[in-house]
Image 1: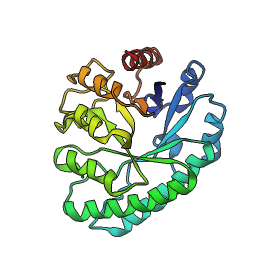
Image 2: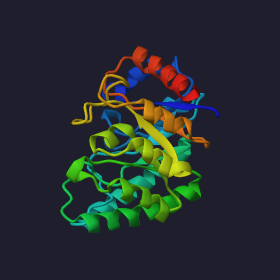
Image 3: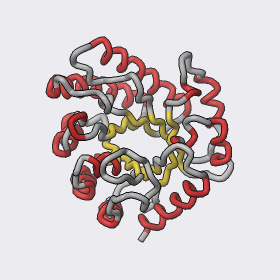
Image 4: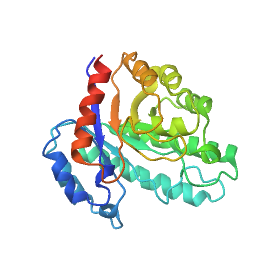
Length: 262
C-alpha cells in the first residue's frame, strides 16, 4: 500500500512566509492550518490560495480552532456562527483543491457545563457539515480533542460518532489520545476504514507538547503496528510544534514512511 505522509504547517503558524523553505523541499502532502496572523479577519482568501496553488502534492486543510465551538449548548448562537464559519472553510478547501478538511467538534479548552447537550449540538452540526462536505467532494475528518474533563467524547463515544454519521471520517490525534489514556492502537483498529488520517506527535502524557516522535513518553511500536495493519488509504500527518526546524520535519517524514512500510 502507498503511504501518504503529510506535513502540517503548524511550525510556521507565526511566520507563514517562511514556509517557502519547506515548500521548496517537500513535494508530499501538506496540511494547511487556518490559524495564525495570516488568517486574522478579514481573511485574505486569495493570498492564501496563491501560496499553495502550485504545490505538487495533495492538500488537506485544518480548519480554525480559536473562538469557535460547534458544541456550545449554553449559547446556541456561538454554535451556529461556528457552523457558518466552517461551511465557508469547506468552500475555501474545495476552491484550493484540498482532499480533506479537519475539524474540531468542540473548543478543547472550554469546560463542558452540559456534556450530553453539548454532544448533541456537535453531532447535529457535524451532520450538517458532513452533508455539505459530501456535496463538495471533500472528506470531513473529525479529530479527537479535549483533555480529561474537557474532552467532548470518550474513546467509545468517539467511535460511535462515525457509526452515527456516515458523511464524516475519523482523524485520530495520537498525542491527544495518549493524554486521555486511550488505547490508541485499539482505537485505530476499531475505526478501520472510517479512519482517514492520524496526527503524529509526541508528549509527556500531561501536556499537548507536539514534540517530535520519540521525544516524549508515547510507546510507538503498537501504533505503527496498528497503522501497518490498515488496508485502505489514509493520511499520516506530522503535526509538530511551532518553530520545529525544517530539517527535523523532513527527517521525520522520511522516518514515518519507513516505519509504515516495514
